[in-house]
Image 1 (cartoon, helix red, strand yellow):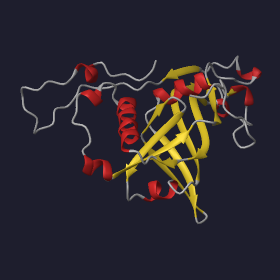
Image 2 (image 1 turned 30 degrees about the vertical axis):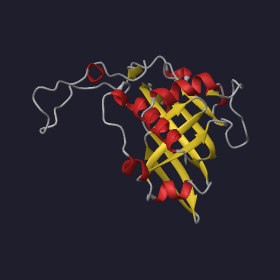
Image 3 (image 1 turned 90 degrees about the vertical axis):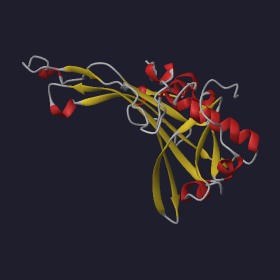
Length: 221
């Protein structure tokens, strides 16, 4: 675990647009990463950019991403290409009096670095546990663990959390002064991820009930 409470703020990772919304604090960045479910990983191969949505998990000051050992993404990144990793939480729609000032409330993280291949079987198992618990806390203890064939078919990459930033927008719309007197509703429409009732697999025995962590599932706030 890094002793630094802040990430490196380099020329490419500094928040330039509305910098007052930016932060390099590890605490905030980890909070956002731990609540989000999906990240987008960007990289370039032969001058062709790719952005792939992926699940991930965080342990300390590193992220784990995984996929098929024959996927282009995993085979490309294990060679040490630079990546851009982004995760976003959408907290609400900001409804202004003018269309120009409509916005969104959000919390986002952008990270830069090189991902390396996890070669140790023990670390790979740890990484897969981290990934599983990121998505469904408690599931690692409930399901069958990966066997040797599945481990061989899966590649895991490790990305250190060293360079990047968070950016947050919250609160009411920022309308133009002249527009505040207009008879137009303005404010915020909060958005949240909520879970529904678990749907039984048709091949599941009728005697097996859903675990409590699915009925109580929630993300963050």
